[in-house]
Image 1: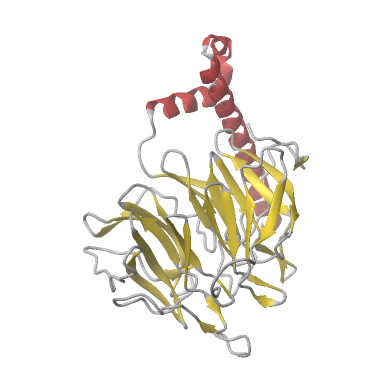
Image 2: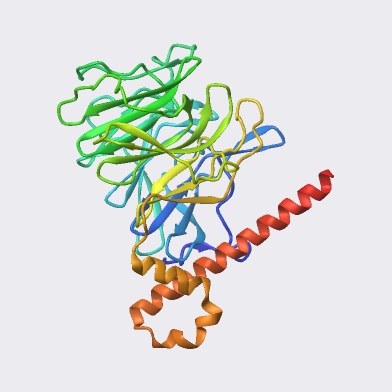
Amino acid sequence: MADTSGAAPPREPFCVAEERSGHCAVADEGYLYVWGGYVSVEENEVYLPNDELWIYEIDSGLWSMHLMEGELPPSMSGSCGSCIKGNFFLFGGFDDKGYSNRLYYVNLRSRNGTYLWKKITDFKGQPPTPRDKLACWVYKDRLIYFGGYGCRKQSELSDCFDVHDAFWHGVPPQPRAAHSCAVLGNKGYVFGGRVLQTRMDDLHSLNLDSWVWSGKINTTGEKPRSRSWHTLTPVTDDRLFLFGGLSSDNVPLSDGWIYCVKSNEWQQLTHLPKSRPRLWHTACLGKEAEVMVFGGSKDDLHFLDTGHCSDLLIFQTQPYSLLRLSLDCIGRNAVLLESQMAHLPPRLLEEALDKITFWSATNYRQGRKAKAEDLEETSTS
């Protein structure tokens, strides 16, 4: 279980992180960490507190909020969050003062319940120019940032898409923002995003050892439609999971696709619910190749910025292990199996208790959401 000595008391049973879009999320050692982003309050964009770190324990399904200390980053949206060996790195973003190119990190494996931000200033070379809506590849303990929206020079007033291309070879993709990146092996993949006023559907890869771009990858068969504000998540050694985003005709998307490197083709997942669109959300990989999508918006943020979400969508991309299926069965039927629980080995009992908590929390939240939807439907009828 998580060390909750530094956690604020829950506001309600089975509380959840506040709704938001444009936030950062990373997964590490069985936990999902969420920071930043913004919400809409009376048609105003309000950044979430910069000293709050929300932590989701994957096994038990419980959220907790921890207050952070140290050299706090400003409250921002559109920042890029990445994790290396338990350190959560935060780069770029947009705040009340404009675009940022500051770099911060925090140790997520703190054993005393204290999460201390530190600003990194002792680096060599020049950092990327200020930007938001960028993406990152993590490879061999390196953070490789690509794209984003910002200004080429601090003295320029006009916005433009910006990318550093001084040392790579091949045919790079057009400069873009609100795209998605993922690493498979030694290649960094980038899909879609916005180029000026156009949303793209192109797929590229960059060899992260030789710095050679592939050029546009011509896949076989059907492929995802053009989009921005989506996510791309590696789920196996040769497969990527694409979810959501905003289409070229400003429609929030709820479709999911698997790209297979070996066959060089996209496959649409037909079993996903079509009523749960998301854009400018985050997606992280769980313990058994499930993809955890948190937050984001269900509306077109350009025209109807009111649909920020706080629920966690979990997409199973491969069959669960027999142990996982058995624990889920125990968790769903805890009352029926209560008299037999004491016969489980201690370690298995602990895992089973986590699953009981998980399904209790899930049922509570689903019931609460159903009541809220009924009240909303009643008030509008």
